[in-house]
Image (cartoon, rainbow, N blue to C red; front, side, top):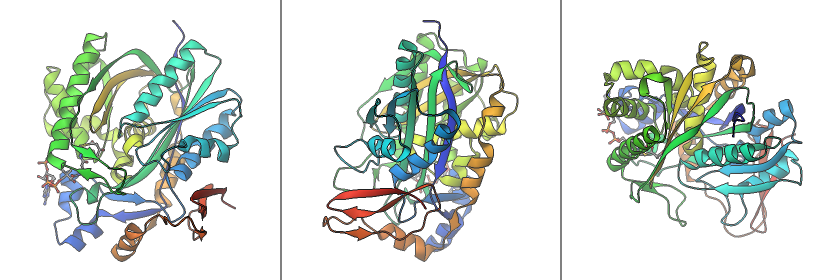
Length: 390
Ligand code: CAA
């Protein structure tokens, strides 16, 4: 078909608290440069007691509905690896909080950090089939590793919502992409654990192998040449990972770059992730938001998107930035969301980390902390009770 399809609007939300990684380094008695330079992270977002992936998602999506209305949305795709229920899609709660039309389908998608990309591609297919419909895609996660573990400095929280539509105002997606799946135990979370397990070194190799596999497939399916991409937004478990991946991909593409050059080429995609940490499914899309908010010369240019989810699935795809994209941006809101975070000390962080969801099915009211538009009010009868924040 000849209809252009892609991202019409993109909006973000992050957690209420921030822990500077210098605080974590001091606590562990290690050089903060390991975090600031070695993994390329400055701080990580943490959810308030009354936030979860659903409230972050609803808060990210609300500005999109305020701008575009909801009447053409017939599908809600919620991507997460930190869902709140084994049965009900988290998107159903978001659908309710946002007052979306009853005449919509809603579903949750899971494959580690990759499923936001699956959601985006499925959304594009639905819109191509019927260009009068719009799809609300939301990627939302809270990245949580055990205290004192290797993954601890790469925690974070965030959601990115996107409106996928015909004749999009921000990014027109190319119809071709490259994909890759390989069963590999680099990172996973059994149903009985609330923190993820990871083989850090294996995960870095698995990311690069999967991504280069997806890149080769992208090229074989009509993908653009490496040098024709203005830049690439990578999945960012930590920003240094994007730089490592870019060096590896450039090599495979026959256009090798030094680490410093790679870091400079990607700089505009790294600003938000450096401050919020890993947001799993949302992470690459935070990278895209950062790029759109920090580069003024992208109209008509092609950008690459490099998605990776441990376990593992990767997809490399691309799109063309639309003329006038700057006037549809949300740089001020995203920056404000990051700057509004309450900076906490180590003791408070530890106390928050040790909180667990009650499993007794009783009545539990949560403290009123978040200033976001939606909050988790409490639990009752094994249900989560959400509300609009007064
Ligand atoms: N000054 C500057 N740099 C320093 C330093 C210092 N004082 N001390 C150490 N460094 C550098 C190291 O040289 C290293 O850099 P290179 O990788 O470029 O060599 C970097 O800091 C990290 O040091 P280590 O490798 O020693 O760190 P670590 O053993 O603590 O592990 C990690 C780092 C593997 C990323 C760990 O944080 C982790 O397991 N994180 C979670 C897993 C993860 O994010 N994996 C990414 C791929 S998987 C994925 O993408 C899916 C997902 O979202 C999870």
